[in-house]
Length: 493
Ligand SMILES: Cc1ncc(COP(=O)(O)O)c(C=O)c1O
Image (cartoon, rainbow, N blue to C red; front, side, top):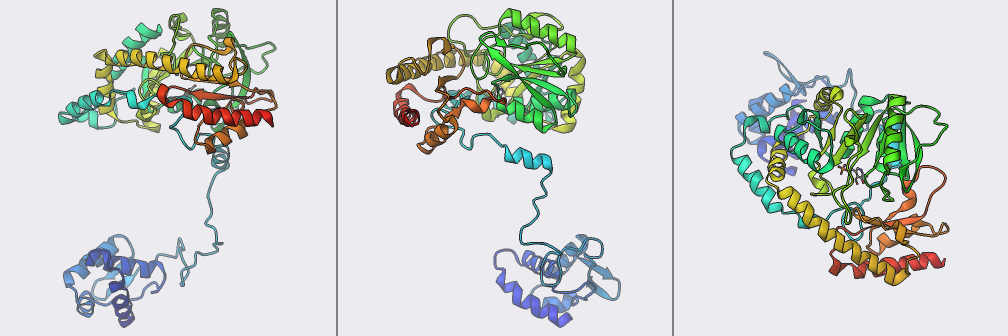
Protein backbone atom coordinates (compact mmCIF):
# COMPACT_ATOMS: atom_id res chain seq x y z
CA UNK A 1 0.00 0.00 0.00
CA UNK A 2 2.82 2.38 0.89
CA UNK A 3 4.39 1.72 -2.52
CA UNK A 4 1.06 2.43 -4.17
CA UNK A 5 0.94 5.81 -2.41
CA UNK A 6 4.42 6.59 -3.65
CA UNK A 7 3.59 5.57 -7.20
CA UNK A 8 0.38 7.60 -7.13
CA UNK A 9 2.14 10.70 -5.88
CA UNK A 10 5.11 10.29 -8.22
CA UNK A 11 2.62 10.27 -11.06
CA UNK A 12 0.37 13.11 -9.87
CA UNK A 13 2.82 15.57 -8.35
CA UNK A 14 4.45 16.66 -11.62
CA UNK A 15 0.99 17.14 -13.19
CA UNK A 16 0.24 19.97 -10.75
CA UNK A 17 2.89 22.47 -11.65
CA UNK A 18 0.65 25.38 -10.71
CA UNK A 19 1.59 25.88 -7.07
CA UNK A 20 4.34 25.59 -4.49
CA UNK A 21 5.63 22.08 -3.84
CA UNK A 22 3.99 21.79 -0.40
CA UNK A 23 0.61 22.94 -1.75
CA UNK A 24 0.87 20.47 -4.64
CA UNK A 25 1.64 17.56 -2.35
CA UNK A 26 -1.18 18.59 -0.02
CA UNK A 27 -3.60 18.82 -2.98
CA UNK A 28 -2.62 15.40 -4.35
CA UNK A 29 -3.01 13.55 -1.04
CA UNK A 30 -6.26 15.36 -0.16
CA UNK A 31 -7.78 14.65 -3.58
CA UNK A 32 -6.73 10.98 -3.47
CA UNK A 33 -8.50 10.60 -0.14
CA UNK A 34 -11.64 12.48 -1.29
CA UNK A 35 -11.79 10.41 -4.48
CA UNK A 36 -11.55 7.20 -2.44
CA UNK A 37 -8.38 6.11 -4.25
CA UNK A 38 -7.07 4.90 -0.89
CA UNK A 39 -9.45 3.34 1.57
CA UNK A 40 -10.04 4.35 5.15
CA UNK A 41 -7.26 3.05 7.38
CA UNK A 42 -4.71 2.65 4.60
CA UNK A 43 -1.27 3.55 5.79
CA UNK A 44 0.81 6.28 4.22
CA UNK A 45 4.55 5.94 3.74
CA UNK A 46 6.62 7.42 6.55
CA UNK A 47 7.58 11.04 5.97
CA UNK A 48 11.26 10.23 5.45
CA UNK A 49 10.42 7.47 2.94
CA UNK A 50 8.01 9.70 1.03
CA UNK A 51 10.46 12.61 0.96
CA UNK A 52 13.17 10.35 -0.45
CA UNK A 53 10.85 8.75 -3.01
CA UNK A 54 9.62 12.09 -4.27
CA UNK A 55 12.97 13.83 -4.04
CA UNK A 56 11.70 16.59 -1.78
CA UNK A 57 12.57 17.75 1.72
CA UNK A 58 11.23 15.85 4.70
CA UNK A 59 10.22 19.13 6.24
CA UNK A 60 7.78 19.75 3.37
CA UNK A 61 6.23 16.31 3.85
CA UNK A 62 5.80 16.69 7.62
CA UNK A 63 4.15 20.10 7.20
CA UNK A 64 1.68 18.62 4.70
CA UNK A 65 0.94 15.66 6.99
CA UNK A 66 0.40 18.04 9.91
CA UNK A 67 -2.07 20.14 7.89
CA UNK A 68 -4.02 17.05 6.77
CA UNK A 69 -4.06 15.76 10.35
CA UNK A 70 -5.50 19.08 11.57
CA UNK A 71 -8.18 18.99 8.85
CA UNK A 72 -9.14 15.41 9.75
CA UNK A 73 -8.06 13.70 6.50
CA UNK A 74 -5.38 11.69 8.29
CA UNK A 75 -5.00 10.13 11.70
CA UNK A 76 -1.74 9.29 13.41
CA UNK A 77 -1.06 6.52 15.88
CA UNK A 78 2.09 7.02 17.87
CA UNK A 79 4.66 4.44 16.93
CA UNK A 80 2.65 2.92 14.09
CA UNK A 81 2.35 5.66 11.46
CA UNK A 82 -0.09 7.87 9.56
CA UNK A 83 -3.39 6.57 8.14
CA UNK A 84 -6.30 7.71 5.98
CA UNK A 85 -9.01 8.81 8.40
CA UNK A 86 -12.58 7.55 8.31
CA UNK A 87 -14.40 10.29 6.44
CA UNK A 88 -17.39 8.30 5.31
CA UNK A 89 -18.96 6.47 8.22
CA UNK A 90 -21.26 9.31 9.31
CA UNK A 91 -21.44 11.46 6.18
CA UNK A 92 -20.61 9.50 3.03
CA UNK A 93 -19.30 11.81 0.37
CA UNK A 94 -18.16 9.77 -2.59
CA UNK A 95 -18.01 6.13 -3.52
CA UNK A 96 -14.66 4.73 -4.65
CA UNK A 97 -14.54 5.73 -8.29
CA UNK A 98 -15.79 9.20 -7.59
CA UNK A 99 -19.58 9.14 -8.02
CA UNK A 100 -21.76 10.94 -5.49
CA UNK A 101 -23.93 8.37 -3.70
CA UNK A 102 -27.41 8.27 -5.27
CA UNK A 103 -26.74 11.43 -7.21
CA UNK A 104 -28.42 11.98 -10.56
CA UNK A 105 -26.60 13.91 -13.22
CA UNK A 106 -27.97 17.26 -11.94
CA UNK A 107 -26.83 18.52 -8.57
CA UNK A 108 -29.90 19.21 -6.41
CA UNK A 109 -30.75 22.93 -6.35
CA UNK A 110 -31.77 22.85 -2.71
CA UNK A 111 -34.11 25.79 -3.26
CA UNK A 112 -36.86 26.30 -0.73
CA UNK A 113 -40.36 27.02 -2.01
CA UNK A 114 -39.79 30.61 -1.00
CA UNK A 115 -36.44 30.74 -2.77
CA UNK A 116 -37.84 29.19 -5.92
CA UNK A 117 -40.71 31.71 -5.99
CA UNK A 118 -38.32 34.56 -5.41
CA UNK A 119 -36.17 33.54 -8.36
CA UNK A 120 -39.08 32.67 -10.62
CA UNK A 121 -40.62 36.12 -10.25
CA UNK A 122 -37.38 38.13 -10.16
CA UNK A 123 -38.16 41.44 -11.84
CA UNK A 124 -35.12 43.69 -11.49
CA UNK A 125 -33.71 44.87 -14.77
CA UNK A 126 -30.57 43.03 -15.82
CA UNK A 127 -29.10 46.33 -17.06
CA UNK A 128 -29.30 49.33 -14.80
CA UNK A 129 -27.57 52.09 -16.72
CA UNK A 130 -28.39 53.65 -20.07
CA UNK A 131 -31.04 55.77 -21.80
CA UNK A 132 -33.91 55.77 -20.57
CA UNK A 133 -33.51 53.61 -17.47
CA UNK A 134 -36.11 54.88 -14.96
CA UNK A 135 -35.18 55.72 -11.40
CA UNK A 136 -31.47 56.21 -12.02
CA UNK A 137 -29.87 59.62 -11.42
CA UNK A 138 -26.89 60.90 -13.37
CA UNK A 139 -24.24 59.15 -11.31
CA UNK A 140 -21.52 60.88 -13.38
CA UNK A 141 -22.37 64.33 -12.07
CA UNK A 142 -21.91 63.62 -8.39
CA UNK A 143 -18.77 65.38 -7.03
CA UNK A 144 -17.10 62.06 -6.25
CA UNK A 145 -13.73 63.67 -5.60
CA UNK A 146 -15.11 65.77 -2.75
CA UNK A 147 -16.60 62.77 -0.96
CA UNK A 148 -13.48 60.71 -1.68
CA UNK A 149 -11.28 63.43 -0.15
CA UNK A 150 -13.26 63.34 3.05
CA UNK A 151 -13.15 59.57 3.01
CA UNK A 152 -9.38 59.57 2.53
CA UNK A 153 -8.86 62.04 5.40
CA UNK A 154 -11.11 59.98 7.67
CA UNK A 155 -9.36 56.73 6.73
CA UNK A 156 -5.97 58.22 7.55
CA UNK A 157 -6.95 58.75 11.17
CA UNK A 158 -9.98 56.54 11.61
CA UNK A 159 -11.09 55.91 15.17
CA UNK A 160 -11.24 52.14 15.72
CA UNK A 161 -14.96 52.39 16.48
CA UNK A 162 -15.62 53.56 12.95
CA UNK A 163 -13.92 50.49 11.51
CA UNK A 164 -15.64 48.01 13.76
CA UNK A 165 -19.27 46.87 13.56
CA UNK A 166 -21.47 49.95 13.49
CA UNK A 167 -23.09 51.54 16.49
CA UNK A 168 -26.81 50.89 16.92
CA UNK A 169 -28.68 52.91 14.31
CA UNK A 170 -25.61 53.78 12.23
CA UNK A 171 -23.04 56.56 12.40
CA UNK A 172 -24.16 59.08 15.07
CA UNK A 173 -22.96 62.09 13.08
CA UNK A 174 -24.90 60.99 10.02
CA UNK A 175 -28.02 60.49 12.14
CA UNK A 176 -27.61 64.03 13.54
CA UNK A 177 -27.01 65.51 10.09
CA UNK A 178 -30.04 63.70 8.70
CA UNK A 179 -32.26 64.75 11.60
CA UNK A 180 -31.41 68.41 10.92
CA UNK A 181 -31.81 68.03 7.18
CA UNK A 182 -35.13 66.16 7.32
CA UNK A 183 -36.61 68.52 9.89
CA UNK A 184 -35.65 71.53 7.83
CA UNK A 185 -36.25 70.30 4.30
CA UNK A 186 -38.98 67.68 4.65
CA UNK A 187 -40.77 68.86 7.78
CA UNK A 188 -40.22 65.44 9.38
CA UNK A 189 -40.63 65.12 13.17
CA UNK A 190 -37.29 63.66 13.89
CA UNK A 191 -34.56 63.21 16.48
CA UNK A 192 -31.26 61.42 15.72
CA UNK A 193 -32.19 58.57 18.08
CA UNK A 194 -35.20 57.78 15.91
CA UNK A 195 -33.13 57.27 12.75
CA UNK A 196 -31.88 53.90 11.54
CA UNK A 197 -29.38 53.90 8.68
CA UNK A 198 -29.80 50.93 6.33
CA UNK A 199 -28.06 49.73 3.19
CA UNK A 200 -30.76 50.89 0.81
CA UNK A 201 -34.46 51.36 1.34
CA UNK A 202 -35.16 47.79 0.28
CA UNK A 203 -33.36 46.60 3.38
CA UNK A 204 -35.38 49.00 5.54
CA UNK A 205 -38.66 47.74 4.05
CA UNK A 206 -37.54 44.15 4.56
CA UNK A 207 -36.89 44.92 8.23
CA UNK A 208 -40.26 46.66 8.62
CA UNK A 209 -42.11 43.72 7.14
CA UNK A 210 -40.31 41.24 9.39
CA UNK A 211 -40.54 43.24 12.61
CA UNK A 212 -44.04 44.62 12.29
CA UNK A 213 -45.96 41.87 10.54
CA UNK A 214 -46.28 38.12 10.73
CA UNK A 215 -46.84 35.82 7.76
CA UNK A 216 -50.48 36.13 6.73
CA UNK A 217 -50.82 39.74 7.93
CA UNK A 218 -52.14 42.20 5.41
CA UNK A 219 -50.39 45.17 3.81
CA UNK A 220 -52.04 47.79 1.61
CA UNK A 221 -50.06 48.79 -1.42
CA UNK A 222 -50.71 51.49 -3.96
CA UNK A 223 -52.09 50.28 -7.30
CA UNK A 224 -50.11 50.84 -9.42
CA UNK A 225 -47.11 50.84 -7.16
CA UNK A 226 -43.48 49.90 -6.81
CA UNK A 227 -43.17 46.18 -7.57
CA UNK A 228 -39.97 45.96 -5.47
CA UNK A 229 -41.86 46.55 -2.24
CA UNK A 230 -44.61 44.12 -3.19
CA UNK A 231 -41.99 41.44 -3.80
CA UNK A 232 -40.31 42.05 -0.45
CA UNK A 233 -43.57 41.80 1.44
CA UNK A 234 -44.78 38.72 -0.36
CA UNK A 235 -41.52 36.88 0.16
CA UNK A 236 -41.85 37.60 3.87
CA UNK A 237 -45.27 35.92 3.79
CA UNK A 238 -47.49 39.00 3.97
CA UNK A 239 -50.74 39.21 2.03
CA UNK A 240 -50.93 42.33 -0.09
CA UNK A 241 -54.01 44.27 -1.11
CA UNK A 242 -53.82 46.73 -3.98
CA UNK A 243 -55.48 50.07 -3.18
CA UNK A 244 -56.36 52.28 -6.16
CA UNK A 245 -54.64 55.61 -6.70
CA UNK A 246 -56.22 58.65 -8.36
CA UNK A 247 -55.01 62.21 -8.79
CA UNK A 248 -55.26 62.79 -5.03
CA UNK A 249 -53.11 59.77 -4.23
CA UNK A 250 -54.03 56.49 -2.51
CA UNK A 251 -57.82 56.04 -2.30
CA UNK A 252 -58.93 53.52 0.33
CA UNK A 253 -62.59 52.71 -0.14
CA UNK A 254 -65.18 51.13 2.10
CA UNK A 255 -65.90 48.35 2.82
CA UNK A 256 -62.35 47.92 4.08
CA UNK A 257 -62.55 44.23 4.96
CA UNK A 258 -59.61 42.71 6.77
CA UNK A 259 -57.61 45.42 8.57
CA UNK A 260 -54.09 46.02 7.31
CA UNK A 261 -51.00 45.93 9.54
CA UNK A 262 -49.00 48.11 7.19
CA UNK A 263 -49.92 50.75 4.61
CA UNK A 264 -47.28 51.64 2.02
CA UNK A 265 -47.58 54.92 0.21
CA UNK A 266 -45.62 57.55 -1.75
CA UNK A 267 -47.58 60.70 -0.81
CA UNK A 268 -45.16 63.39 -2.03
CA UNK A 269 -44.88 61.90 -5.50
CA UNK A 270 -46.83 58.76 -6.29
CA UNK A 271 -44.69 56.08 -7.85
CA UNK A 272 -45.02 55.66 -10.77
CA UNK A 273 -47.85 57.99 -11.89
CA UNK A 274 -46.86 61.12 -9.97
CA UNK A 275 -49.94 62.26 -7.99
CA UNK A 276 -49.43 64.34 -4.84
CA UNK A 277 -51.58 63.10 -1.97
CA UNK A 278 -54.16 65.70 -0.96
CA UNK A 279 -54.50 66.85 2.64
CA UNK A 280 -57.93 65.17 2.85
CA UNK A 281 -56.43 61.80 1.87
CA UNK A 282 -53.50 62.30 4.24
CA UNK A 283 -55.93 62.84 7.10
CA UNK A 284 -58.04 59.88 6.01
CA UNK A 285 -54.99 57.63 5.91
CA UNK A 286 -53.78 58.72 9.35
CA UNK A 287 -57.28 58.17 10.72
CA UNK A 288 -57.52 54.70 9.17
CA UNK A 289 -54.07 53.72 10.43
CA UNK A 290 -55.10 54.68 13.97
CA UNK A 291 -58.43 52.88 13.62
CA UNK A 292 -56.77 49.68 12.39
CA UNK A 293 -53.78 49.99 14.71
CA UNK A 294 -51.65 49.91 11.57
CA UNK A 295 -48.52 51.78 10.60
CA UNK A 296 -48.11 53.84 7.45
CA UNK A 297 -44.78 53.54 5.65
CA UNK A 298 -44.11 56.78 3.80
CA UNK A 299 -41.71 56.09 0.94
CA UNK A 300 -40.17 59.48 0.15
CA UNK A 301 -37.85 58.10 -2.52
CA UNK A 302 -37.45 61.15 -4.81
CA UNK A 303 -39.16 64.13 -3.18
CA UNK A 304 -36.07 66.32 -3.68
CA UNK A 305 -36.83 66.65 -7.38
CA UNK A 306 -39.78 68.96 -7.90
CA UNK A 307 -39.37 71.41 -10.74
CA UNK A 308 -42.13 73.92 -10.06
CA UNK A 309 -43.98 75.10 -6.98
CA UNK A 310 -42.79 74.36 -3.45
CA UNK A 311 -41.59 71.04 -2.04
CA UNK A 312 -44.40 68.87 -0.69
CA UNK A 313 -44.03 68.42 3.08
CA UNK A 314 -43.92 64.89 4.43
CA UNK A 315 -46.98 63.04 5.69
CA UNK A 316 -45.06 62.02 8.79
CA UNK A 317 -44.61 65.68 9.73
CA UNK A 318 -48.32 66.48 9.53
CA UNK A 319 -48.84 65.84 13.22
CA UNK A 320 -46.58 64.86 16.10
CA UNK A 321 -46.88 61.19 16.99
CA UNK A 322 -48.35 60.30 13.58
CA UNK A 323 -48.45 56.50 13.04
CA UNK A 324 -45.90 56.77 10.24
CA UNK A 325 -42.46 55.37 9.47
CA UNK A 326 -40.71 57.80 7.17
CA UNK A 327 -38.35 56.12 4.68
CA UNK A 328 -35.82 57.92 2.50
CA UNK A 329 -32.79 57.05 0.38
CA UNK A 330 -29.65 58.60 -1.10
CA UNK A 331 -30.07 56.42 -4.19
CA UNK A 332 -31.68 59.20 -6.24
CA UNK A 333 -29.82 62.22 -4.87
CA UNK A 334 -26.31 60.70 -4.82
CA UNK A 335 -26.16 57.32 -6.55
CA UNK A 336 -27.83 53.92 -6.02
CA UNK A 337 -24.53 52.06 -5.57
CA UNK A 338 -23.89 54.02 -2.36
CA UNK A 339 -26.56 51.84 -0.69
CA UNK A 340 -27.35 54.27 2.11
CA UNK A 341 -30.94 54.90 3.14
CA UNK A 342 -32.75 55.67 6.38
CA UNK A 343 -35.89 55.07 8.39
CA UNK A 344 -37.33 57.59 10.83
CA UNK A 345 -39.15 55.41 13.33
CA UNK A 346 -41.75 56.15 15.99
CA UNK A 347 -39.91 56.64 19.27
CA UNK A 348 -41.23 53.40 20.76
CA UNK A 349 -39.83 51.31 17.89
CA UNK A 350 -36.45 52.93 17.30
CA UNK A 351 -34.30 50.98 19.75
CA UNK A 352 -35.84 47.62 18.90
CA UNK A 353 -35.35 48.19 15.18
CA UNK A 354 -31.72 49.18 15.67
CA UNK A 355 -30.84 46.12 17.71
CA UNK A 356 -32.73 43.79 15.34
CA UNK A 357 -30.87 45.38 12.44
CA UNK A 358 -27.53 44.69 14.11
CA UNK A 359 -28.49 41.05 14.65
CA UNK A 360 -29.82 40.54 11.14
CA UNK A 361 -27.55 42.61 8.94
CA UNK A 362 -24.88 44.30 11.08
CA UNK A 363 -24.53 47.06 8.48
CA UNK A 364 -21.23 48.75 7.92
CA UNK A 365 -19.46 51.39 5.87
CA UNK A 366 -18.92 53.55 8.94
CA UNK A 367 -16.34 55.69 7.19
CA UNK A 368 -18.61 56.34 4.22
CA UNK A 369 -21.45 57.22 6.56
CA UNK A 370 -19.22 59.71 8.40
CA UNK A 371 -17.94 61.22 5.15
CA UNK A 372 -21.55 61.61 4.03
CA UNK A 373 -22.43 63.31 7.33
CA UNK A 374 -19.66 65.84 6.75
CA UNK A 375 -20.82 66.31 3.17
CA UNK A 376 -24.33 67.14 4.41
CA UNK A 377 -23.16 69.37 7.29
CA UNK A 378 -20.90 71.39 4.97
CA UNK A 379 -23.87 72.32 2.76
CA UNK A 380 -22.39 70.47 -0.25
CA UNK A 381 -25.19 67.92 -0.30
CA UNK A 382 -27.88 70.60 -0.52
CA UNK A 383 -25.85 72.35 -3.26
CA UNK A 384 -25.56 69.12 -5.24
CA UNK A 385 -29.30 68.47 -4.99
CA UNK A 386 -30.06 72.04 -6.13
CA UNK A 387 -27.72 71.65 -9.09
CA UNK A 388 -29.20 68.29 -10.09
CA UNK A 389 -32.70 69.69 -9.80
CA UNK A 390 -31.95 72.20 -12.50
CA UNK A 391 -30.08 69.63 -14.65
CA UNK A 392 -32.98 67.15 -14.45
CA UNK A 393 -35.55 69.92 -15.02
CA UNK A 394 -33.87 70.73 -18.33
CA UNK A 395 -33.65 67.07 -19.33
CA UNK A 396 -37.30 66.61 -18.50
CA UNK A 397 -38.23 69.53 -20.76
CA UNK A 398 -36.05 68.18 -23.55
CA UNK A 399 -37.63 64.72 -23.40
CA UNK A 400 -41.14 66.20 -23.25
CA UNK A 401 -40.36 68.28 -26.37
CA UNK A 402 -39.08 65.23 -28.24
CA UNK A 403 -42.23 63.31 -27.32
CA UNK A 404 -44.49 66.21 -28.36
CA UNK A 405 -42.67 66.68 -31.65
CA UNK A 406 -43.04 63.01 -32.52
CA UNK A 407 -46.43 62.04 -31.06
CA UNK A 408 -48.28 65.28 -30.28
CA UNK A 409 -49.86 65.21 -26.85
CA UNK A 410 -51.60 61.87 -27.33
CA UNK A 411 -49.09 59.77 -25.35
CA UNK A 412 -48.25 62.41 -22.78
CA UNK A 413 -51.38 64.42 -22.00
CA UNK A 414 -50.85 67.76 -20.23
CA UNK A 415 -52.50 66.53 -17.02
CA UNK A 416 -50.10 63.55 -16.86
CA UNK A 417 -47.01 65.78 -16.86
CA UNK A 418 -46.27 65.99 -13.21
CA UNK A 419 -43.37 68.37 -12.77
CA UNK A 420 -41.35 66.17 -10.45
CA UNK A 421 -39.25 63.05 -10.20
CA UNK A 422 -36.86 61.35 -12.57
CA UNK A 423 -39.17 59.81 -15.19
CA UNK A 424 -42.11 60.45 -17.51
CA UNK A 425 -44.88 57.96 -18.20
CA UNK A 426 -46.01 57.51 -21.79
CA UNK A 427 -49.57 56.26 -21.97
CA UNK A 428 -50.30 53.62 -24.59
CA UNK A 429 -53.54 52.17 -25.93
CA UNK A 430 -54.77 49.05 -24.10
CA UNK A 431 -54.12 46.93 -27.16
CA UNK A 432 -50.37 47.58 -27.07
CA UNK A 433 -48.32 44.94 -25.29
CA UNK A 434 -46.02 47.21 -23.29
CA UNK A 435 -43.93 44.30 -21.97
CA UNK A 436 -43.10 43.13 -25.51
CA UNK A 437 -42.48 46.74 -26.51
CA UNK A 438 -40.01 47.27 -23.65
CA UNK A 439 -38.26 44.05 -24.61
CA UNK A 440 -37.99 45.13 -28.23
CA UNK A 441 -36.68 48.53 -27.17
CA UNK A 442 -34.05 46.89 -24.91
CA UNK A 443 -32.94 44.83 -27.90
CA UNK A 444 -32.35 48.17 -29.66
CA UNK A 445 -30.26 49.31 -26.68
CA UNK A 446 -32.91 51.55 -25.10
CA UNK A 447 -34.07 50.69 -21.58
CA UNK A 448 -37.62 51.49 -20.51
CA UNK A 449 -40.05 49.83 -18.11
CA UNK A 450 -43.56 48.68 -19.00
CA UNK A 451 -46.20 50.42 -16.89
CA UNK A 452 -48.33 47.26 -16.66
CA UNK A 453 -45.63 45.65 -14.43
CA UNK A 454 -46.54 48.08 -11.68
CA UNK A 455 -50.07 46.68 -11.38
CA UNK A 456 -50.87 43.68 -9.21
CA UNK A 457 -54.60 43.44 -9.96
CA UNK A 458 -56.61 42.64 -13.05
CA UNK A 459 -57.02 46.16 -14.39
CA UNK A 460 -53.82 47.47 -15.83
CA UNK A 461 -52.90 50.51 -17.85
CA UNK A 462 -50.38 50.16 -20.62
CA UNK A 463 -47.51 52.55 -20.96
CA UNK A 464 -43.77 53.06 -20.73
CA UNK A 465 -41.70 54.68 -18.02
CA UNK A 466 -38.88 56.75 -19.44
CA UNK A 467 -36.15 57.90 -17.10
CA UNK A 468 -34.51 61.11 -18.28
CA UNK A 469 -32.20 61.86 -15.36
CA UNK A 470 -29.25 59.83 -16.60
CA UNK A 471 -29.32 61.09 -20.21
CA UNK A 472 -27.64 64.34 -21.20
CA UNK A 473 -29.82 66.50 -23.44
CA UNK A 474 -27.23 66.26 -26.22
CA UNK A 475 -27.43 62.43 -26.06
CA UNK A 476 -31.20 62.10 -26.02
CA UNK A 477 -32.19 62.23 -29.69
CA UNK A 478 -30.63 59.00 -30.92
CA UNK A 479 -32.09 56.65 -28.28
CA UNK A 480 -35.40 58.51 -28.44
CA UNK A 481 -35.63 57.96 -32.20
CA UNK A 482 -34.95 54.25 -31.72
CA UNK A 483 -37.59 54.02 -29.03
CA UNK A 484 -40.09 56.04 -31.08
CA UNK A 485 -39.66 53.65 -34.00
CA UNK A 486 -40.40 50.69 -31.68
CA UNK A 487 -43.49 52.47 -30.32
CA UNK A 488 -44.80 53.23 -33.80
CA UNK A 489 -44.33 49.63 -34.88
CA UNK A 490 -46.11 48.36 -31.78
CA UNK A 491 -49.02 50.77 -32.26
CA UNK A 492 -49.38 49.81 -35.92
CA UNK A 493 -49.71 46.10 -35.14
C1 LIG B 1 -40.50 54.00 -5.14
C2 LIG B 1 -39.19 53.44 -4.71
N1 LIG B 1 -39.00 53.17 -3.41
C3 LIG B 1 -37.86 52.63 -2.99
C4 LIG B 1 -36.82 52.33 -3.83
C5 LIG B 1 -35.58 51.66 -3.30
O1 LIG B 1 -34.54 52.49 -2.98
P1 LIG B 1 -33.10 51.93 -2.56
O2 LIG B 1 -32.21 52.09 -3.76
O3 LIG B 1 -32.68 52.83 -1.43
O4 LIG B 1 -33.22 50.51 -2.13
C6 LIG B 1 -36.97 52.57 -5.18
C7 LIG B 1 -35.88 52.21 -6.10
O5 LIG B 1 -35.92 52.38 -7.28
C8 LIG B 1 -38.19 53.15 -5.63
O6 LIG B 1 -38.38 53.39 -6.93
